[in-house]
Length: 402
Image (cartoon, rainbow, N blue to C red):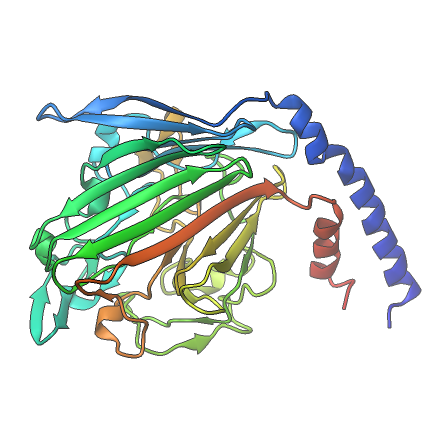
């Protein structure tokens, strides 16, 4: 039963909510220029062999913008509004092709043929053992030495009403990075008028092969330059897959309840990050609640100062939450910003890491005649359209609500 003190505090929260309404989307809409969805095509740069890398700029009727290039089918820029209606770029990356061709931690790229890690770079399929490049300690990571995010894709703008979309396609030949089978892959980016970035993946193969595709965007909802420790994260995941010292799953699926990996209630990313002593932050695969193959909420993250909120919806069984523990300020990104530790977060929708070596994990094997299909949606909004939810979250987290 609530006390009078608690009721008074709740009333204050509701009053704050009323004040919050001054910055509702109605005011934002007035500051936005009306228009139509569009796709603009331009050159992003040229490879040494003369291959032109193209850029596709997607714009919706509300003014949001996404830019994707044919090198790696990479999302290089994403501008969405804050609570004042001001647009800012919320993904890390570069403004030139040379930097994308150099060493970097997969900013914005389409990852394949197999996202995440495969133990010791080995797996057995239909009685044959395959050996991959070990490019992450003793393990294979993100498709090997030259994964999909370092390949040149073909692209075409899609002419659909009310949306801006571009489809990328790539043929990964049999034996590429030692994976079996010709694999035909397509990735479609769509920017809707609801400020959603939809990513649809599909693939067909001529020989049985592992397939695990994701996008590796690094998000900072406040814009690059600050850390994300104050971002508030909710994960629709009661369990995670524990790993060994090389970040390979042990095979166990464990509850995260009551641990630093418990984000089943909205929690600031920095709240318990110091308790993760072994790797210094988050780089964990979470088991998304609900039925794999069906679109469902995986995560919600909000940034208090800007009011931006991002929801992640997916058909995949897992999501890798990574707190950019590998950034150290040595990489200089767009506008000369040094990308530092905890300067972004990744929410990579995926199959479980090393699932090719764990019979109890969802299968990542695609066979001839079958079609791989996966969808992930990054949906942007202004935190608390009514203004109430944020204040209730605040009261709840400081202990005033049961």
